[in-house]
Image (cartoon, rainbow, N blue to C red):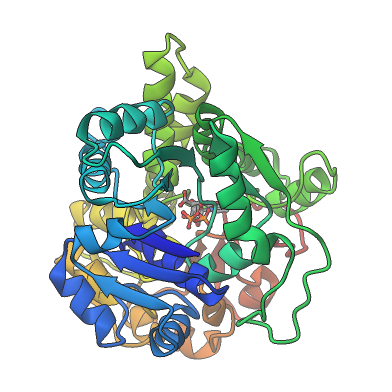
Length: 456
Ligand code: UGA
């Protein structure tokens, strides 16, 4: 099928590239000429495993094109995805200026019947506004526009894998034509009919659920899903605090809780909280959406409050151990908001760095991918070129992001250069027994008496 993607940010680039990979003819459009230039040169504006290979292959085989020309993107596509950003306004509500602009351009330039699909995370009822906007700005009376909502559920760092092997595909439609087009578009994924570029031996042995809903429900599924996951994390963090006070071990507790199939173990990792461009923003937006419809979503407000409090918890734990922070060196392992990404948006590590610097500490950090962005965001943070350097002359090292390589560090070497061998494991990702045996003072999150190290 001929597909266009408006907005070549995180969501748009992954969507366009993966749709080309499964056989469609895709044009990705972005207003930013520098970004399009970078992509045309075969370089990536973001770090995402496998994406570079897929982009290069699909440019080569002619299925993937990039342009800054909105008319070119809107003209011939059977399905157009709106993937522009929807940044938060100061009050938490999503700013839909770019969604409206993309819609108007489609209305003006489309030359054939088209399914306009919102993929950006948008508040419920955005679909109705897109429909109205299309009707007002439509240039050719003879063509038909159908609006659909198709929320994305991909995780950064796993985006290609999540797109090609999703738990579910949700499409919100108001016409059989839109449903049929999106079914056809996703059929290779739903039926596992494409050579998997990540695992060549991969055979999808189950059909992917393809859920068809009305547009408003699809829009809500996205916010409800992200908010529920954020709630699970804050719940685990709250239980971790109780564990700590009561001498229980959060790792054992969530293992036991998560074995209940109705609950599940995923997203119960306690630590320094969630960050990124999605959970914090979507949580605030959902509270705002609820408020507009007359519901005070106090539950989600508390989820957000608990999350912000995790950062202060790290400062408190360090103060409890070190007494005075002024003038002391503290090392941070990991600066990205989670492993396998260079994304630092709302990264707990950076919030912690800022707070420690405010307290007068000298903060030095290392991250395999996010160091440059972190330095730009927090200029007073000293960046180390390897993980061992964060320990040099440090009174404490805080693990903020659980990059797998950190668990495999030579901790003896790390300890040798520290003033005081204190590790604050902000993600409960390190081997407490091993570190203690090496002579480290180990502080975890919610780690009471327990012994096992059980992470999902
Ligand atoms: C999240 C959702 O997981 C995706 O399904 C969704 O598509 C995406 O947002 C989006 O809306 O675009 P992402 O933000 O990439 O994906 O990252 P996650 O893997 O969900 O992690 C979010 C944050 O939660 C990270 O800071 C992570 O460290 C933290 N986290 C996660 C925990 O603190 N504990 C956990 O148990 C799990």
